Image (cartoon, rainbow, N blue to C red; front, side, top):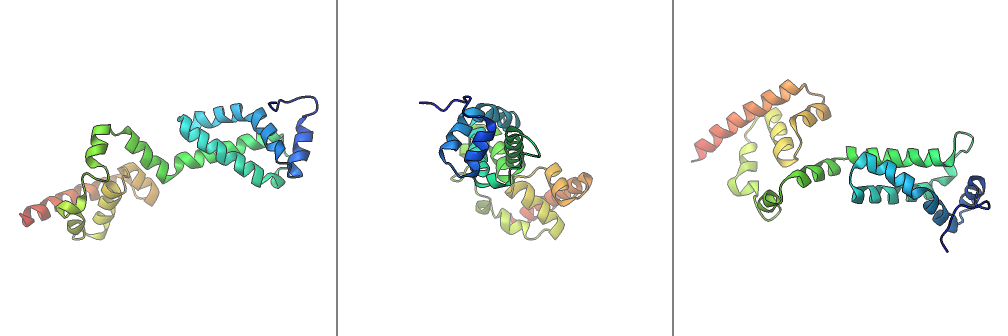
Amino acid sequence: MQNQPTKNNTEEELVARLRSQDTSAVSVLYDMYSPTLFGVVLQIVKEEETAEDVLQEAFVKIWSSFQSYDSSKGRLFTWMINICRNLAIDKIRSKQYRVSQKTNEMPASLRATYGSDGFKPEHIGLREVTEKLNPDQKQIIDLMYFEGLTQSEIAEEFNIPLGTVKTRARSAIKTLGKLFRERE
């Protein structure tokens, strides 16, 4: 029998069951609200698989922090939407998510070439050569080429003007070119 909202499953009764740690109430809660919450999360993260992960994380958080829900401050649904929304925003702001998005945007043929078994900067001595850059230049090159950040992301994350990041990157690339020519 599927848990459907009935006259006996009012929001107040559901809240009381959840407060008393009634695990069967989580199934009712999920059946009642998951489709709508999934839609909210999906609008933010744009990928179904990621939205499913965030929704699962949200229900775990809802269950584990239910004692903090205060019905005098708003409806249960509103409280749950805020949890889902905040987790979805945290997900898309995470470095892991941003890097995975960049990898997903790269064509499969390039991922295969530059994946874990493909291109390795140490094969051409790139890490060794970058050690010869001044610290500001080295930081920019490390972040751009080894961490996968864009110049805009570097500027924002380290509170450096974008023009400064671009200048350091250009200067570092010129210096790297000279260093590689000297090695030949």
